[in-house]
Amino acid sequence: MYRAKALNEFQYQVFSTDMRDEAIARLDLESDLLIALERDEFILFYQPILDLNTEHISGFEALLRWPHLQQGLISPARFIPVLEETGLILNMGEWVIQKACHQLKQWQTEFNQPNLKMSINLSRQQFRQQDLPERIAEIIHDVRVDASKVQLEITESMVMKDAQVSHQLMLRLKDLGIRLAIDDFGTGYSSLSYLHRFPTDTLKIDRSFVSRMEKSSEDFEIVQTIITLGQKLNTDLVAEGITTARQHELLRESGCQQGQEYYFYKPLAVDEIAALLAAPCKSGS
Ligand code: C2E
Ligand code: MG
Ligand code: MG
Image (cartoon, rainbow, N blue to C red; front, side, top):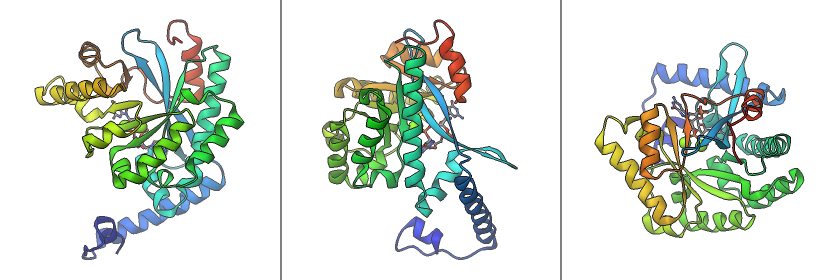
């Protein structure tokens, strides 16, 4: 039934033993998740975002991690859908915003870099929360972080689901002075006319295009088209998942200002980032 519901309201699915095994594994995951939440076991990793011209760190993306006793670090791609279905994502999401803002403020102060930015992923359910702007306002006020250095990432599909409602919510979020980014740009369906009206500060070029851009001229053209679009819309551009020096160069020459370089800067723990910020020439605000 859940499989059918996930596909579409009017779908049906035939039960198979694979589905039963999957359902059992999922129940295990769900109960482990509940225990981990109670024990406060989740942590945040941070992936540096670089200025592609200077190669200095301009900010970070906060990425949730679950250190599981048996399975090691579990990727959010596995457990976020479960948190979404159970509704637990709302509390977790708020914890992420609180923690990431606090961390940003601490690094800005400790390393005297007030221009460092923090980018935070929002889940589907969070983006449908009517009082989200008030909740974020409270966090920003309590942490005393500069709102203009906090960026929320939402995907095209989240925004386009109910474009009118999204537009209103985005305007209320922008009133707080924070930044809004469209994550995984190019993989969903955006209406160009909406894109123009949405108060978007950043387009994040999906890593599927970046990873293929050296070998496939089609993907390189898609990347260039997104860059041109960003320039016309007057948004910042961040390329995700850069893994080679050539990709870095091509992106820089094409006018993309920022990127997440997986090869040098995988998502890192707090103390590893602190060591990077303490090293001369790695950051620049
Ligand atoms: P995302 O926001 O698009 O984050 C980028 C993901 O791509 C991260 O995976 C990052 O580690 C990975 N990545 C970046 N460059 C490369 C690369 O070159 N190669 C490879 N193999 N991977 C690369 P991660 O941390 O597993 O996160 C997966 C997704 O989970 C995120 O995609 C985001 O949608 C979601 N997520 C992560 N943290 C949070 C959170 O705190 N809240 C919410 N709502 N979602 C989150
Ligand atoms: Mg993201
Ligand atoms: Mg992304």
